[in-house]
Amino acid sequence: MVPSFPELAARLAGVGRHAHTRGWALGTSGNFSAVVGTDPLRLAITASGLDKGRLLPEQILEVDGNGELVRGSGQPSAETLLHLAVVRARGAGAVLHTHSLWGTLLSEAHAAAGGLALEGYEMLKGLSGVTTHEHREWLPIVENSQEWTREAEAVAARLRSRPELHGFLIRRHGLYTWGKDLDEASRHLEVLEFLLEVVGRGQGEGLRSRPREEETPWPR
Image (cartoon, rainbow, N blue to C red; front, top):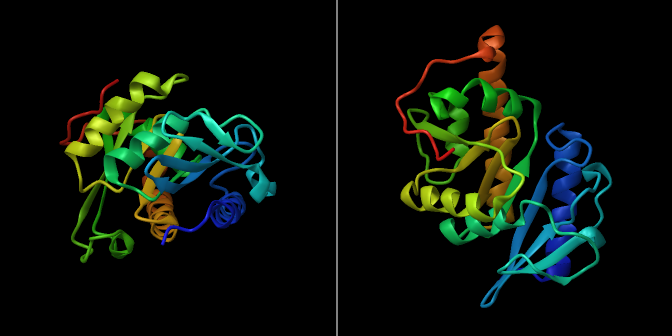
């Protein structure tokens, strides 16, 4: 059974505060959502411009399938349409977006390569469907935008064509990941943020630029 909106609001507020304590959503950065219902589609999502370290359940909004506010007071996240696109493309029950230091640095360092490969790490087994460290997880990098109406569909199309993906990076911005529910999405967030930090620390000064990898870049 899908949790009620009040339950999801409380849990999303907790996710936001936790992400802040980990340094993944400082200031007003980051946004978090969970599916309230599918027929019609309803999404619980953080309001725009809030300090995630002080996020409260009453600051979680409910929007419809077009991103229009149906419950709560405030402005839905500027990336609401991107959350909805991920939900539709992947059948996700929750979508989490962070602005960590390592996600931001690596999204720029690997932009020319079109993405970042994570492979050979035991922690990869925390991703749904991954059973061995001998796995290559590809995190595509998409250009940032102030208007996601058109770009969200391009991201959704790529996600539908790559069902093995667990996340992507927005250039100079941060990580998007998801899961069948909030528990799985939160686990994916911890796994991927850990791996981004491992890779970032390992590359050190080489973060300024990286060679092109064997993948097709996302639409720019």
